[in-house]
Amino acid sequence: MTNASIPAAPKGATGILVLADGTIIWGRGFGATGSAVGEVCFNTAMTGYQEVMTDPSYAGQIVTFTFPHIGNVGTNEEDVEADEPHALGCIVREDVTAPSSFRDQKPFDQWMAEQGRIGLSGVDTRALTRRIREAGAPNAVIAHDPDGQFDIDELLAKAREWAGLEGMDLAITVTGHQTKIWDSGIWRLGHGYEPDPKFVKVGAKERPHVVALDFGAKRNIFRNLVKAGAKVTVVPAKTSFDDIMALEPAGVFLSNGPGDPAATGEYAVGVIKQLLEADVPLFGICLGHQMLALAAGAKTVKMHQGHRGANHPVQRVGGDWGETENLVEITSMNHGFAVDSDTLPDTVVETHKSLFDGSNCGISITGKRAFGVQYHPEASPGPQDSFYLFEKFVSGLAS
Image (cartoon, rainbow, N blue to C red; front, top):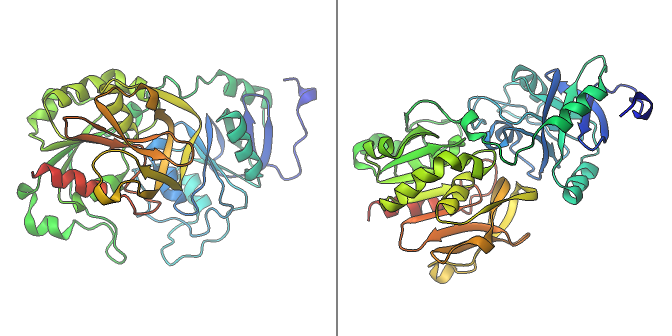
């Protein structure tokens, strides 16, 4: 791109999004200054922007929020899903306004600045969302300079040079690096995330022990496992089969996470295969679900636009559901890769399917106590239709 072809910045523009195809979107920057390169996606949830920004599954991504009023309830120390944000930045329609919530502790724009994350407001997010739906999720650079000075040629080159998420193992960059016990329950107003009362009363020894492989897990997953009755030990993504078995698990949980499941699977799928051979009960969510499918012989694919939001309908289509066969769950989703249903071997049953596009949303493995779902049953943000999956997994460990 030459300087003659660069559109003039509108008055007051302090932020910019430069797509790899040369498209330039101006706006008003907020949060941190500087630039970041990643994949632009969109999320349709109306609530939970702080949970979204801190979800490790968004590593390497710039989130376009389709809901126009982002930041209106501020931020707090409780509504986070990891120690730090993992989304690179966000794009919103309206400027961040003064927060209105009794739980607010800090304005969203201030929180973004302190966390080193770039925001861009004043963008026609409907047009950008349509562009992603039609052409796929693009690579891009988001940048913020209070003086509105940008080297667009340099930003464009950076967007075009970025390799993209396909083939990229990001789980290793967001996993925890220490083994730890998780005992806190789900959030309660006025109590926060206190240790689960049943956990304190009954004690950890009498609970089935779940070892959770952390590929970039959201904290609310562990809280729901505890609520369902498990003792939870969280271990790093590259933990070996022998080290997992040394912890004497009643079952193993495979967490969500960012990046290409085939890339992470280079070190994780072999371990999952060993767990299957040892007949260890398994439960996978999102990336964990995808790698469970890879271990069973299926393949995964990069999606055109992905699924991200808190209103995705999923139907139960296989497995032993009894009277709830064909029941529809409204789910929370965040994924840009999916299990290819056409590659599922005869030993794998498709249990759930998206009603938006028919893509795979759940599997179980015949003859094994192993299943996975493509969505987030722990929500945060999102509906609570799928909490039963934690109870299904944990209750099965005691049988």
